Image 1 (spheres, rainbow, N blue to C red):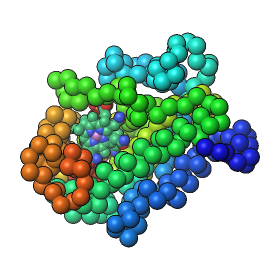
Image 2 (image 1 turned 30 degrees about the horizontal axis):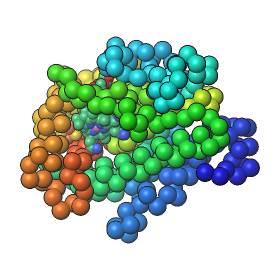
Image 3 (image 1 turned 180 degrees about the vertical axis):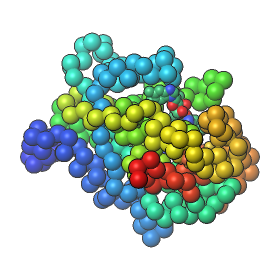
Image 4 (image 1 turned 135 degrees about the vertical axis):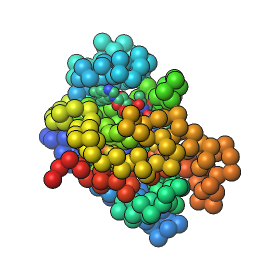
Amino acid sequence: MGLSIEMKEGIQNDPARFITQEIKEYVSSSPDNRLSFMNDYVLWDEPLVQFAGGDDPIFTEYKTIIASTYLTPREALAKTYERKADDLPERLSVISWILPAAEETRKTNRAETYVPSRLWSHTRYYGEKFNEKLRAHVAEILTSMGYLAVAPFLQPYFEIFNNEKGPYSNWSERHVAFAAGLGTFSLSDGFITERGIAHRCGSVVTDLVLPVSPRTAKSPYSNCLFYVDGSCIACIERCPAGAITQKGHDKIKCHAYLRDTLGYSTDALIDGYDNDKSVAGCGLCQTKVPCEFQNPTKK
Ligand code: B12
Ligand code: SF4
Ligand code: SF4
């Protein structure tokens, strides 16, 4: 990729601004963020972008919170470049972004009670394809400038394991977003940002030094009304699989609903939506709820 002089100066003078603008620009101008077969419908709104320190101790804590297989940013970068973790530059950063779902996508999903709307399903499928391109684009800009950079989610070492609680991966985009101060988890397990819970997220690890964004949340759940004052529980009522209770989100029930009822292992309910059936999506718990498009704890 050839970079202009302006781009080179931009990344050197104000790297945070440059990366943020580059991600926003890609979201607003890429044809991959549009459904060409639906009048160029735009899937994602303007993204939120923040940065975590690559050696923030929270990433090591995730090895206990999630599993010992969880990769720290330094480990992910070292694996990518086949180097020892200690041989990498002293300071690493993680770029984290949130892609908020467009209003019409959320509106159509609000009207559903059993299956995702066609737009939601397309957002799960084509929107994630776009998110993959965005990850690759951000990593490529950085590597073409001589920085080390990787989107761990796109690497062959990215893995999803299973235990008695359900699936878990070795690189969680939401846990990165939490580290970067973009929001908190919730009763439904979804990640609530200032633009709500109906989004997808992504990340890139790099040795470009970026200013660490402050983590202001009081707890890992403080954007969820249920954890603030015991109220709400709207997501419990929205879930057609009974996967959410006051004890939290049952990943196994949720996964089974996506796989067996909506998805690929039986006659898909959303057959005819033109998607790969294995990625039907659902997200009913992320729409028609107070946290859909805002932080509900902010008055
Ligand atoms: C495996 C997976 C699934 C599984 C399991 C989901 C899950 N909750 O983990 C299944 C198939 C069920 C699933 C379903 C869905 N998924 Co999914 N999935 C993933 C994937 C690939 C990995 C998730 C993972 O590894 N989780 C790790 C486990 C351990 O996380 P966890 O159990 O939620 O973690 C809890 C603990 O860590 C706990 N915790 C306890 N103590 C502490 C302390 C601290 C300090 C912290 C921070 C946390 C913490 O908090 C967490 C929440 O309870 C990610 C992509 C990625 N690589 O990140 C997408 C991802 C999580 N999925 C996503 C989405 C959108 C969905 C669906 C809405 C489907 C759809 N698109 O229509 C549903 C929603 C389900 C739900 N209610 O959360 C988005 C979530 C975005 C958001 N808004 O939150 C992701 C991030 C994909 C993306 N690129 O954006 N998914
Ligand atoms: S619907 Fe209510 S209880 Fe459920 S995650 Fe959102 S704020 Fe929390
Ligand atoms: S994604 Fe669907 S099945 Fe899973 S918890 Fe949300 S509403 Fe329930």
